[in-house]
Length: 228
Ligand code: DX5
Ligand code: ZN
Image (cartoon, rainbow, N blue to C red; front, side):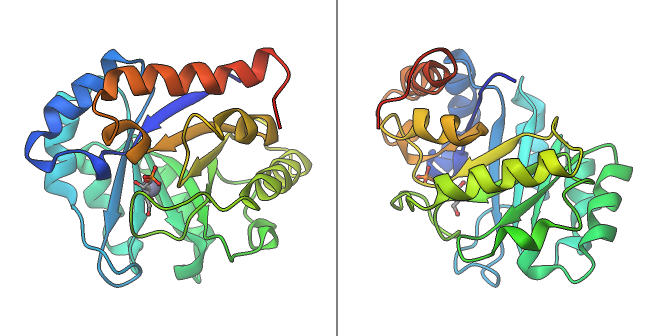
């Protein structure tokens, strides 16, 4: 499994999202990460299906839609119709997670499950065999530009072990929050294969080059020893 880079447009200029997508795609972005926030599950409010629909028109890469909302079941059809290729939902808000995961898959969209930093890995125990990917939050969701929580590395390794034990060794782990060139290799060594990065890419002044550099740092972990 190679490493994929998923720039988060949360830190881009919302008046020029098309340009933002084009620049990270030139830099080798594999996915475009779209953060949906409702002002309820998280304090912030961002974007909804109409913006995803416009992004789908210009993006060459699949849209990875991260739903930080209290009632995702009400909106998964709309995000699928808008053009999401991947959709992830938080275990913290879903009493019927099994139903939701299968509803997303039935729409032809890859289904991911997200763990907040304080949510234990065991919360995935019964669903690990069903998911297309797992997203480990390495900050508390809601804002870009926060600092990486170091314990996330151990958590990624534990999720990897659970997925393998559940017969789902093909399902990748995505990591989101505070990822940059300094920690990319370490999270890949722990087992992450999709790296989300917002501020490290869009606050850098050169998103194309920052995407390229992050990808190189991440891929180095697959080919050589990782500095600790
Ligand atoms: C945080 C979002 C992230 C965010 C990451 O709630 O889920 O995707 O954009 O931003 P950075 O990379 O700046 O932590
Ligand atoms: Zn996100």
